[in-house]
Length: 315
Length: 249
Image 1 (tube, each protein chain N blue to C red):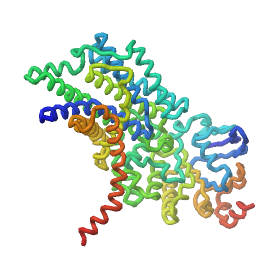
Image 2: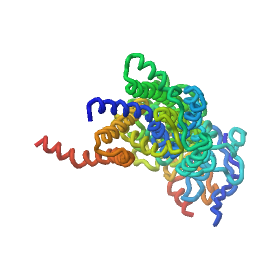
Image 3: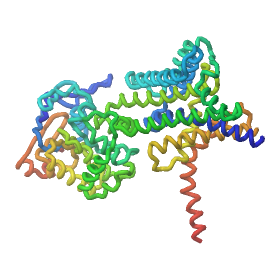
């Protein structure tokens, strides 16, 4: 592999990492903050992608598509939350039910199993044109447009979430996830906070779906397949490198970094020819598993290896 | 003042029914500190669950300052009633810092909107409050509550419960999970806090000596009924041995 191709692959993974980062953050909000795995994420990602692409296909402005996609995600999250909190159905099953329902909704919205739109309608088009004005090569301009738009959107998402979770409302959401009984004792309506958390997590996932669909120039009913495990892998990678006493803002930033590292790992392995692209999902699962094992490995290292090393140094 | 009128609680699991409280009547005047003792299954925790809204009574009314709150939910009652549980883990959010935990308690009964959760003046207030206990907790505001010992957690929980002076404070065997030395310390803190702020308090205890030593009134529950209700000199004259004898009989 030439250096140019290697760098291009890394730029590509940087763009993908930034575009997928909201998914990892969404999973963090449901899995870590609320301590509830939310399987709606896969459905919402595809729903966001389908909504945005259908709107662009019919000539809508990309800003309108980027507004409707998170709204669609929020509605899906709301549906899961209502099933979970009002009908008292287990959270995982609620997510599965909504994801299954969204499959049919997506087919209805697209009126086919796949949809695309002209490239010049995408959010990346104006940035790409602007970069071409500086004499940048067409392909590089496209890659950098992913990075720039991904960075802008991610900055906006992270800032909004950080501000929200610094408020009394945000704190009450965190308390609900951490100790529901205590939250309730302090007058917090825990059902409404669970609802809000799922709405927020799925809204930003829908937004990511809309961005990724434009990056991939189309959407289909299976757009969300595997997104949950990709987001999870990115999340755990981010958590490994997150400092122990990190603030919410730092956590969001490191999770985003985890997403970039995840895509860089995938790109490095596939672009170097070590693995065929068909093995990407297996690689994702292995990476996620390894990342999940790191805390246990750290513990074993601290318990068994570190004392021996210290004894050796002392001797 | 809180008045419980004809409170009954029947649990029905579809196979069998069990009546835990039998038309219980209890009036607690403002500022009174009541200790409740009784064996397992006497109905003490059920009574607390009914008062703070975890459980709806099968029959009866709960009048809080002459308003019936029996149908109000748990969260809605939190503005009036604070409860400290036996398990120190129930009272705090372990993943939140002490300051964040206190901010939650400080906004009890208030609208939790998009205002900042913690402002500088809140931190000053929390520091002052924690410093009163002289346990060094004021220097741990930024630390996670999970780093606190059981006793420290219970002290923080107690302070949180009284931060926005509740109309009623429920202490559910709040020293039972602590070692004797820390339990004594927490009981003394409880006494000082309740007396200084004149908080109406109901405390469940399995410790007969504590039940006699602390509070203005002592109630013994058995089989969902009040079998002893004493206060003043009558209460002070009681000995743990006498109480134990009544308990056994």
